[in-house]
Image 1 (tube, rainbow, N blue to C red):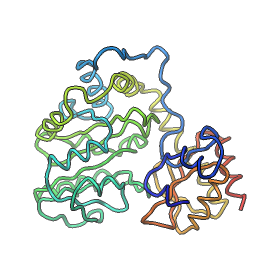
Image 2: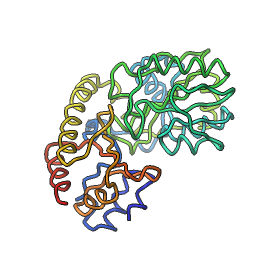
Image 3: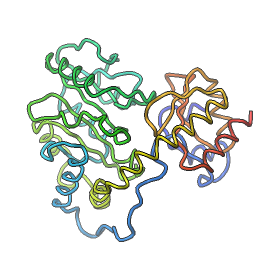
Image 4: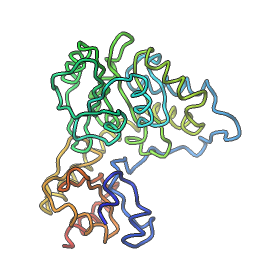
Length: 327
């Protein structure tokens, strides 16, 4: 039954049908989302009757750009970074290389994508896609190393796309401030991971104007719905919540590390939203947890790997601890 869960996380309804229990009873550790989402204020209610306001889009992009440390003219809101990547592949119209292991979409976005190792010698006229922190291994590469690679790729008339879906967890780890109008660096940012509100389908492309213009044209007049405009702008302005969450996540990740090690599973990765375990009996562990209504993330290309999202609190962590011990 593990085969049904090899491509995406978050399929709790299907897990409940296969293993039993109501979906609401399941502990979903399969997505790598912050399980303590940004608390949406009760008074923050979008006007569902009106079309999304273009001025609200400008405000959202300005708030996000301040958070990313980039010129607002280089920041474009998109309905999810995966959608943006596929549109970028059409816009750039060049062969693609994907850093592996990686998101499936990094490979699928380009018709003829080939694997590449980090810091590898760039080919001529290629688009290289990488994530930092990487998924699913959580490796975090220093911005100076990423930018050095970007410069060498640009020297071969290529582009580097850096997917920073999890970068909000790490203050100072982003290469977004290096995006400029004459460069060949593109950065993708995701709202849903760190803020824990993936249902909004909100992301951002940070890129030169020559890239953003056709991207905006492809998306049309109303790329972001009213809730995304209002919630995104307010969340990026909540400096206190962002700071406290950056401090809290590593503490909870360390607690998860201790539980995994207690059961003979060695956690890997620097991203505090998830941990990867390799060289384990992945199918057995997956099904053991599923029988206890806990969903984790297996991988088709790596049958000995499992990714564990960081539990929200001590109660959820204790539940995982008990289930891992029920062998």
